[in-house]
Amino acid sequence: MQRTRQGNARTIDVVGCDADTPPHSLGATGVGIRFAVGFSLAIGLALVISLVALDRFGVAERTAPTPTPPPFVVQDSRELLDAWNTAGLHGVHLIDVTRDLGYAYPPGAIPQSTGWPVPHKDLQDVFRTSVEHRSIIWVAAKTGVARSVTYVVMPTDLSDKVSVGREKGFPGIAPDGSSITANDDGYVRLIGDRFPAAPTGPVALNIDASYFVSGTPEGLIELLDASPLTYSFVTLNRSTDATDVPEAARARLDRAAELLRQRVPK
Image 1: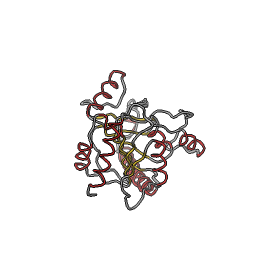
Image 2 (image 1 turned 60 degrees about the horizontal axis):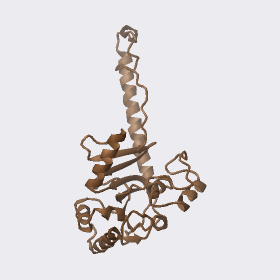
Image 3 (image 1 turned 30 degrees about the vertical axis):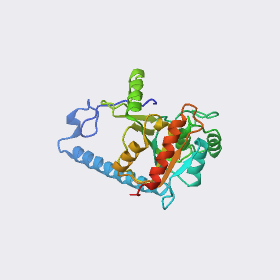
Image 4 (image 1 turned 180 degrees about the vertical axis):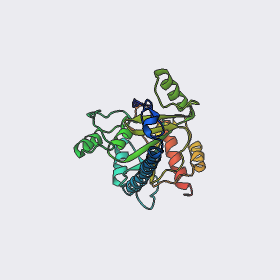
């Protein structure tokens, strides 16, 4: 989890003046008050209109296949990224069911390369060619596949991450330990053990074999059935490039793929 920034605050009174401005300098008629209130309302309305317009424009830039294809099983992170790119995923909300967060810098990456996604195609190509299990979600963010990420982890894994985060003094941990919000210079990721509410725009689901180190296929199907979300693209990553994922977890992922294919879509 990354640092957050806070600006310096100034004390301002209701008419937009510094707190030490003499009240009598405003005049007795209240014109200053009426002007300031009206001006503030106009600014607020303009901000709301701008946000709505930006959101609508952003929705147009979010792409996913239609209709939703069947769940797609891949062997490793390179195949997963290829599947996302081939399907034309761009700017989607990604739900990643996993144990491993996949947010390390890949080999050859430049940590200071800013932007979500990175505006330089040559850097995006570097990230794509060096992707691995430890960096797959970071690459998806930097190359424009995912505009936001929500991790769904097992409760025991969430508890472990909360404990480590509190020990190291990381921000973004909910007081009750139910979630962690990671803010990477404006790119927000949410870590929890439940599926989120339905966001605006297409949603992609990825299920990683690492989830089944302690999770079960049947338990995951129960979570999916209890969620209101529908998905534009579903992948299951066997994560053969992750040496700490046992074959038993991959076998459970294969079972989950069978159950997903039998499941009636919402």
